[in-house]
Amino acid sequence: MDIIEKLQILTDAAKYDVSCSSSNSSRKNKGGLGSADPAGICHSWSEDGRCISLLKILFTNKCIYNCDYCINRRENLQKRAEFSPEEVAYLTINFYKRNYIEGLFLSSGVIRSPDYTMERLIEVAKILRFKENFNGYIHMKSIPGCSEELIKELGNLVDRMSINIELPTSRSLALLAPDKSYNKILSPMKYISEESEKNISDRRKYKNAPKFVRAGQTTQMIVGAADESDLTIIDRAEKLYNAFKMKRVYYSAFIPVSTSTLTAKIKTPPLLREHRIYQADFLMRFYGFHSNDLLDLSNPYFDLKLDPKINWAIEHIERFPIEINRATYEELLKVPGFGRTYAKRIINSRKFAALSYDDLRLLKISTKRAANFITVGGVYRGINFSSKEGLKFHLKDNNGFVQMDFLGGRDELYI
Image (cartoon, rainbow, N blue to C red; front, top):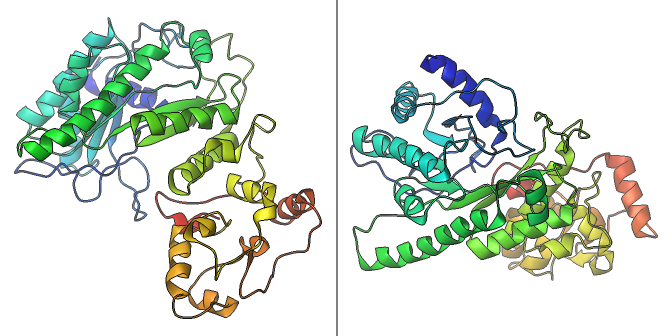
């Protein structure tokens, strides 16, 4: 099998791993090829709205595991391929020189054993860093169950590592991925987090200390493969952020491409549900919300027709409307339609005078989404409603699906 055929197979197999966005790497160019320093590399939208690219491939789609949610599971009948470390390095350098990519995201099925697979990934990184003198962005997937020595070696070579937890509970993991265990997934996450903390301390003491996973770690959870509620998923994500200083938790709607009896009843991917969970994740990371603020045991699923922030505001309507001339920054962030940019603009502008609706218009602050939740100088311009259900009905009836559209950190687009 030639390298082009391998590339076709292994780029297609890699599309189901979504935990490849990246930013905040500080690797500088020291006379070699590429640089991840200026704006970071990602397979999505950057914070300033640019679409930037990386080479996203699997090292191999061969796998000793038989996870029911995975297209590359051992029992799936499909064409298999495996790169050599030299082939991955060759592709990366040649795609980079042609200006097709700015970095590499490399994941892999598990071949022979976790340690053997990690050794192959490390070999790729060594060729790129030391032989090709490549200083661009590299993100690799750490293989659960491999030794800590191999994690440390790879962490000193790459910018970011991901360890995909895939499922939010040990029960669902045991059911759908019996070859894996929560301990083998959480232990390396903990090790990377602790090693990163030690590395920060070492770099303060020693100028030439190597940087370890300088752009942090990420993970991925699949939505809809098991019967977990939205509350279970975002609660697990919040715990991952708090325990391991996770840079991002990514979510992937389960796509029924695997021939498993356990997932045979799932016919379509729950894309809108995935979208709502991403919105909730954004609220937890940037707006001070917690998972139990957004959902509870009596209401464990998001309303698919309302974004989580508007739904939360309606459920806590007794806190509204708030007067924007007196509200704190934190209170303004809770208002649907107001993001960090709007909140800061309001706080800074009202130092000089009380704001009116005309002032907001001059400040380019839209109140379309916020109107039902604010007063401006004591004036309310929202609709008259008699109950939470009435307000929900009005928003759904008049606006259809109330969505949140944002790119990266452009939170002023959060509505």
